[in-house]
Image (cartoon, rainbow, N blue to C red):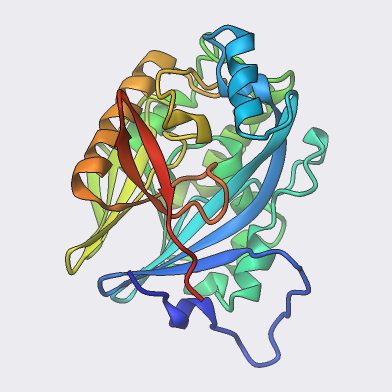
Length: 309
């Protein structure tokens, strides 16, 4: 895997210049395919969200061992841009702006795409791992839709679209206000982009070497994106894997609509990655979230890549 300088350093003359003193994009080359991980920022969430099916003392011990605060910590929000052939594919779209939730450090995607020299009009396809608001909200920011090409194709599992017609929140453990916000954002998204949705059943090849596959679990239509070229592999796992999920894949995350199925799918994916040796990127792993998965006894171990410059 090599650093993709074409994506890492692209810029437009006279274009926007970022003054942020934080790393917000990281480029990887997967064979002949360029992948850029872009940070949408962070959102603070209660640590109870990490696992609601275990003794709180056990969760507290894990947090202490990880040098994390006991009550709340910042969850990363990662998005990827994939260039394969003549296709520029945006995988997920970040949180956007939701002032009612008071999350000012998230929703950074649009300005960070601009800082990376990526014109919204160049995006040919969007793939949604699922329709939680922190994956679709960036496309609902004022003025964004008008900058997208009219023939944009938005790929999402048919089961996901169906789920949000009448979503079931009976198995989640979310902070107050989140179910209503998730429901209303998904409804608005479908209304805004219905004509551009390209639902698939189980699997769809978006471009050469770029395949989206429905996994279910986190939501009924949750999907992962696999990128493969020249013997290299990278999987964008969306919300199947969280930071605690390597050591404790059986812990239920508060945003999972079917926690039992999520755990099963998570373990299956992590096993696959230990066997293939491919790279993993996920939405809520610490930026840039690029790494490998190793077996560690009865569980797994996260092995971050050494940064390339």
